[in-house]
Length: 120
Image (cartoon, rainbow, N blue to C red; front, side, top):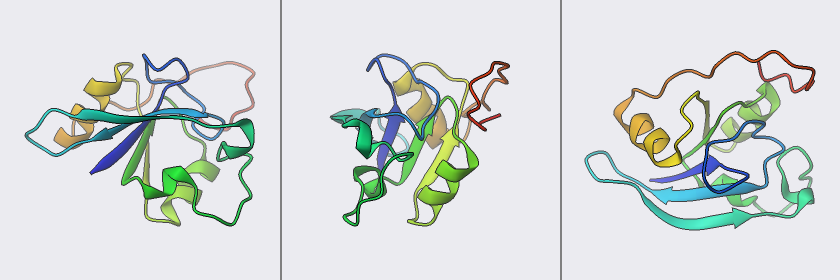
């Protein structure tokens, strides 16, 4: 199973999945440790928020995308191509994948700011 984790710094799970351009990609199966197999470092026009191309987006080949927050548009767009979008408060990318596979991934933390992200 291919799982992408939003990580603008390639170290922690980061929010705003629709605007994210950097993702750690893991191959993972229950009972085995996840293996990082790729890093996506996409140009701005390839964030899901901006993408209007006709070719399949790189995230469309994942089974799941994990981020610290994801708005309803991001969730719906990925669901339309069969990809689960999951928000979490887990900050460690490997732990996030492991907990996702185990069914124990924590819900995202509420945040209050003026980001106008529609991800609460």
